[in-house]
Length: 122
Image (cartoon, rainbow, N blue to C red; front, side):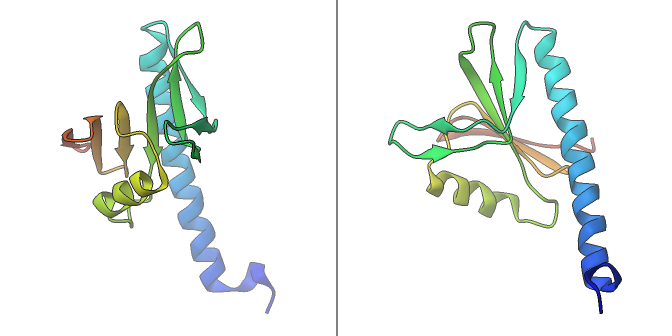
């Protein structure tokens, strides 16, 4: 059976395109909000963390001088958002000014011990 005929692969492709559509829309929403404040979202640029690790958030908020103001990481709604946040922190992702979202919930980390969670459907 060819990959294009495999029902599991077709389902995975549909989930991926749905996830990508939501991710694209959320990126555009963040970028429009940023633009109104003289900033912009830049997709998938690698950054070097304080401990020397290289990570690539889904988006980085930058100003006109290209200074980083924050980061955004999109997760699949099938993932456990809290577990995914811990995995990203273990990889060295910044713990300050980073927004994690899974299209249902968003978690804004202002400092490692200070976060704000909100449902996106309310």
